[in-house]
View 1 (cartoon, helix red, strand yellow):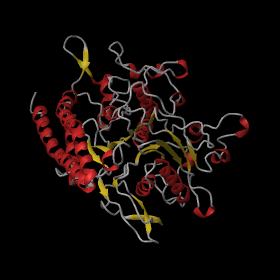
View 2 (tube, rainbow, N blue to C red; view 1 turned 180 degrees about the vertical axis):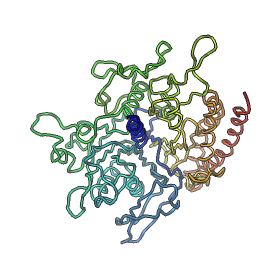
View 3 (cartoon, rainbow, N blue to C red; view 1 turned 135 degrees about the vertical axis):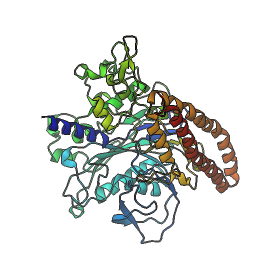
View 4 (cartoon, helix red, strand yellow; view 1 turned 90 degrees about the horizontal axis):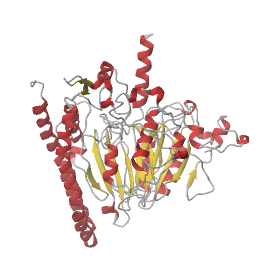
Length: 548
């Protein structure tokens, strides 16, 4: 019986790691400065970020639909596998390209979270005519759209016409698409194997809902759209089969008298990998809210019950439906608030792996204390050794890269769009800004080979520190924070004067303003590898195993 049990545990861990992305988005009246904010963690293996410039094309040109856009072994400028083509437009916009491309030169932003879908909807490459991945649709939207609602319609049309092909495991997908005025949640489910383009049926099932300007959302790898009113196009946009697919498959009965709930129709029952992050988001930004008249579940650890997380039988099991589509934050949200959330390891909660009782050691006084080795990022082998159950934090040691998009309509696009990027693990990495108007990224942010370490790669130098920190995490993380905090604070302190200078220059010479912003951002990116090489030297010296 032991082998099947171990296999089951491995499968559960694998399923939890297939869907790692967390998205937070906030409308312009929910943020401290009036910007629309989108964010995305764990953005795919290819963390290389480059600027693809605006381009012109001839009538009749075709645009390739690529497979493998998340693969860091692919050439930076030209993926190897083409699945098909669509008609090219005569003019495209410049954008930042990466595993999931997030922002263009006109302050259109997109964040992504892989979600779960019913098994009947799962499709793999070659099991039908589907060829449009979500990351490819994102690129087309960034190249062709300035406004969020137009991008929602384009992405929906591309997925319906060419068939939605999941590329992150077997999951469905959710996007938040925003501009300086509004943001929309876009969710898409596949239609299963055997779909034929010539059959005339849509190759995807999708719905989109506008986020209220004074509210914020979390997407924790699960559908969050519930009731839909397709007649209200100011709040909802849908595919023509958004409900009919559920009726045809026996998942919804119009004669039942019950309302059609999108989330219930197409998503499976929720995992705690989703509800745990929903709980953290709700209790962080709207702690006084009482859904259904009840307070949020209490999952904070206290000194009187450090093993609370092991008492799963007595934990509240809430339905995903208690978490609203969006909530009004009790305090307006800043970029720094979102960054702090992205760095969360669920510290002090039942989801914090560093607080697992397995880390408690004798204190020499007859009691138990947390070991200085306790880490919220124990690898698979260490979890097996200590019998620590995997729990999904927001920050992950295998986090690839992530971002916060800040979209500000009171500034010219080149200055107003801010793309804050971390690499590898947000708990360890610094966030550096890239303005929408920059024309290049540093070579260190375009360099990453997962099979060959290089000091020339910003991601590798950060990952080196991430690994060293686990030598004695409880102390090393304080060293990391102490070194990183002044670096980041200097950036935030510099931005008002930099933007004032860029704005004055933009009025006279927009290209000169772009050069100013590019030089500043590339300079920050160039500083990161050297900074983290110095930090790793400090950590290995301080925590070397040559010391007792």
